[in-house]
Length: 166
Image (cartoon, rainbow, N blue to C red; front, side, top):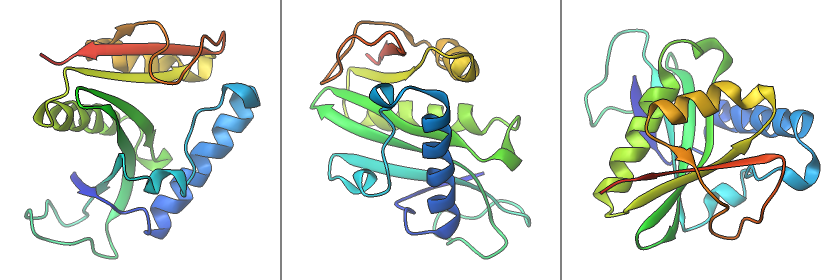
C-alpha cells in the first residue's frame, strides 16, 4: 500500500469523498454532520492523504500513481493549534475493506502528528451503530472518549475521542 499526499483532484478520491458525505447524510442528523466536502478539504490547516494498492507490487518512494492503481482509502489531518491535531475524513474504499487500510492510515496520521510535534490527536465520530467499527479501531490505537474539543459543542450524536502523543 502506498500513501500519497494531496490527491484531492484524482477522480477516484473525489468519488470516495462524495460517497463518504452521502453516507454521513444517510446516517446522521444534519446538525451532527461534521464531515468535510472537497472544498473544505483544501483548507490550509488540512493535509490530505490517500492510500493506493498497486497491482504490480509496491512502488518506490518517488514513483507516481499509474492507471492500474486502486484507491484503498483516505484521511486528513487538521491542525487545531501548535500541539493539537484532529483526524478528519477517514474512509476506506468498499473494495478495500477488511485489508487493514484504516489501521495503516491511522498509524500514518499518528506518526505525522507526532513528527509535527503535536502532543494530542483527537477526532469526532458518530454514536450510531454505523460508526461502531470506527470507534473500535480508534480504541485499539489508544484513543479514549473525551469532552468536545476545538469548536465542537456537546452533541448526543457525536463521540469525541483523543490520544496523547508524548
